[in-house]
Amino acid sequence: QARLVESGGGLVQAGGSLTLSCVASGRTMHVHTMGWFRQAPGKEREFVACTNWNGASTSYADSVQGRFTISRDHANNAVNLQMNNLKPEDTAIYYCAKCRQYGTTTYRAIGEYDLWGQGTQVTVSS
Image 1 (cartoon, rainbow, N blue to C red):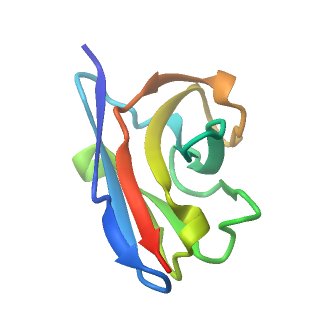
Image 2 (image 1 turned 180 degrees about the vertical axis):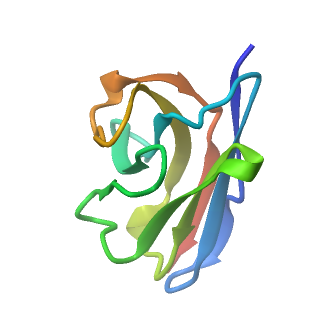
């Protein structure tokens, strides 16, 4: 059975950095668009970033553009999220997800994603 497992979350001071990793098991995700989403307490889950299968097409939420970088690691069937210059408003549970679609297009809509990890907590202190 396919699974996504996130890691790398933690507590960091504002201005710091974290790298999240999402490893897929049970099946290859190489051809699919992969995304990161987050959900803060009391808020809806929101799009953060996504990448197509080869990393040639990426998309970022305006709130993280220029600070976060999504990348693929096909050797390890993984997708990573490098987060720099973190802000307290980045505090949330971060989820990795597999998109139904594949190819060159990126997708931001939650409904396009059909497999989710359990999430990893990121807390940024001021």
